[in-house]
Length: 129
Picture 1: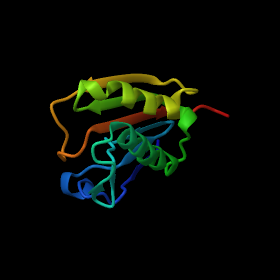
Picture 2: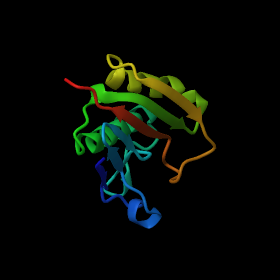
Picture 3: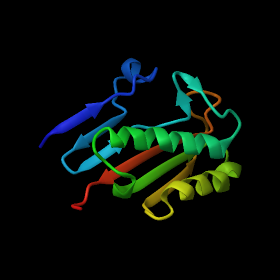
């Protein structure tokens, strides 16, 4: 089985020793993705926009290893405030409403950067087309 590991060049990948996305055979996983672009947190204070950005980053990473949004079978969303759950869930639905992967939304005490409100992870299983 071939294992492919790709990074995005983000500030924490080399420092902490992980890949943005890993594909092993027909399975693929993203690391946690936030609304960080070129080392800068975007959409500060806006959980829906941070979710949309984080999902774009995760889906771009999956595309880099040949995975499409329809292949996503599980998502995890971490939020720093339970009051953001509905906004985050609606942003998730805007991307995955037709796919309907298994999903988990967790409230956590905090994320790596104080401006991060949301972090997402995606898991995919490629299916024959």
